[in-house]
Image (cartoon, rainbow, N blue to C red):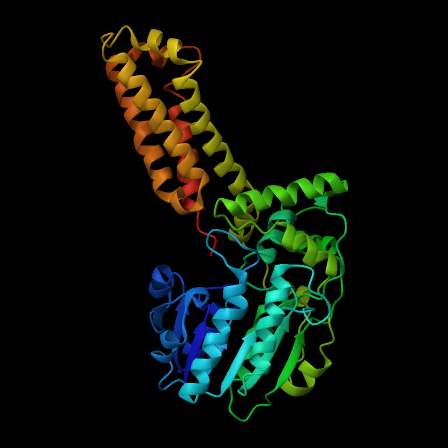
Length: 430
């Protein structure tokens, strides 16, 4: 059996390829930025924590001895606190290719994106094309795969957004979208594995486009039907509102989140995701399956419906919790200060009350800001639960009358804690 290095092995495509290779008895080294959960999920893979964007040639040189071929699936949609497109798509791969040449690892299967050779409207497509060209000039035995929108059992990015939109009672129709030829994850993974064979063709660029051409809205309709939901009302959004939503996604990205709706997605969708799969079929022998046929073979479970309904609720939950805690902190330190003094007066001394109010306000502000930032969201959510329970305990001890207050300040702690738990449960993207 062979030994393969899969880069980006925790992503939608990379995780499937790595799992399939390991399941076939091959030895697999999986490289990714974060590997903790993946290492527990697929222990048969030899996991290595290594970020392609920050990697150097010598980092890969340590991993490549004994490797027969490399699959590069690493990628990102848009620049942000944790994502750097030039480094991830171009500079990092260039270091990898140099290390492969030095180590004598000839064969590389490289996952790019459909249409980057025809237009580069964004930094995403520009850097993807630059990485492709660096590989073509490397002198290695390369295969470049350019998939369209990839659909599979797992969901991330656009495929997760499609599920989320399909579950809405009113489906927003974005202006300026072009046709798609979605491709199944099964076919993409099978193709990558087929071209890892040393006897397979090399120096080829293959467009992995499915046999059906449809609009984004039609694809959402098909997923809605798969979920067993009645046809939804479709609301065509005006261009200004669509732009506002994409920019809101950009703002969330600056905070470290990775929403599927961002301006990069807007420009890439406007370009479309269609191609000619004839060369793919000829060289691989794979007949791409229509996504709707694949969906029909696997009826949606209740878990799919839960995910679809929670997907777009998740950002709403995170945003509302962040605003709730930030607003509570501002109110405590500002216009609500005197009201707080009056509420605490029956149970606390005049010297202690200001300390309690200020400390509580600062804690609320820090929790709210922490929830808003992706890097600190988990500890902030846990802190929110702890502080909420402390508020309930302190209120019971010092101001028990608040349990009977018409505005129910203590009773409302229970739904706040429940919402914090929901946010924790849905925090992971993949």
